[in-house]
Length: 165
Ligand code: FES
Image (cartoon, helix red, strand yellow):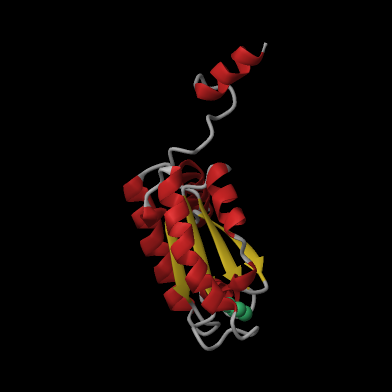
């Protein structure tokens, strides 16, 4: 009973807390996250996972869209350099990452809201540590300025709605 309450509390804290979207490559980082889960390693519940076949398939558009949809941070995690199952996917990701950082600056977001990590299927502990440290980093930055105004709250979204009438 006490454990259920504890679990419930942590999920609720996560909902009110910063929100992070994690793009995880199927072959390495998703398996690493799975290992962290089955090993019952503790890490914050703020991360929403999106499984992709390879980090090379992640369009910069998806990352920008995640921020536009109200995510406070985006994590991209894939196979270590040289281990990509599609040979060059993570090389492309590493190059694109530089462009993405520029795009973030253009959007008025801090670079610290985006992180790229290489996590293998055997690195459950590393995955948990990455989530812990990235969540702390994003918490320190606070909610994203692009976060949408919640429904019913007075704010910019409501004003825009009024102008349309
Ligand atoms: S398959 Fe994992 S990064 Fe390409």
